[in-house]
Image (cartoon, rainbow, N blue to C red):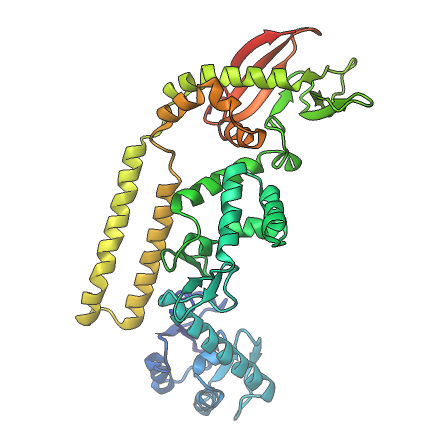
Length: 442
């Protein structure tokens, strides 16, 4: 018994499939790769002798571009005594004709593949995917264009998030300032949407950069990614809390997070802020601490210890990493420039050249994103600014919250006895989790 298989794949829609996917032991696999109706290996299958007893296909739609073409191939194979088995249908075709039900399935599959192929050709040309343009843009002939009425709203949303680091706060700002109501989940999608960064994201997961005018720069996009990563490690309700120490302070004795509590006296407008353990199980409970005192000592320790910590930081060889990434980008750009010459010389066909250009452009976009996310080279200069106490005093609580969370992973409170406590900081770039000890207070 001779069993053969036939595969047809469109490189615009899928990579070349594995020839061992059948689950049967086959004697030979005929495979055609292309974007049209040219199937030379199918013609070879129809004329090879002796005729096989079984012909396996993934689905009958691969035997032709129309239902009539598929029916003709099936009849020719069956006329030679072969049984065509479609794995997708889990069925053998009867003699003389393709059944009506399967013919409808073949027609549906072929229609779907034609639509997908059209989308794939647009993708290779870096054209926008189907559907409405994202808020802030409108569709042009071959790219997204800025919508003058809505683009400023999206830009203001990004600027607000970069300033205060809160998605909920930026969402509320849009509603109160511009009357634009969006959900928090929509705001998060805006922050990570490649379209607002000047690129196009496609269904295969690849991103093509610099296809239209962006609403945020590459540096702003990298900063937004850092803020989102930082917020993920904080308790959910503290990411938009008005107080700068919210979510950062933990009691080292009871391992409870300290939340900000407000206390006021009857018929008086003055309020007092305290940091109180939220889930202390000790008896007696750990005492609350004055918020302003903890904040003052935190600023004092940051000004004193942050420059020294950055000076002794074992930083990665940023220049070498940037050079390596820049070299990869230059290499891929050189290959990209060679494609028109290879196409003109007949070394590559149009489809292969377009696919290669698409892959190279998406790889370059990914490398540029890595380049933008590398740590800045001027950390020592930034540390000098952050070591000035007046710099911290001039900030609002929301602005101070952004800076503290950028550099501090956790503030721990140690309690040697019931009357004294120690302040300790853990910086985000300290891999050994070395705690920088603060001053004692009563």
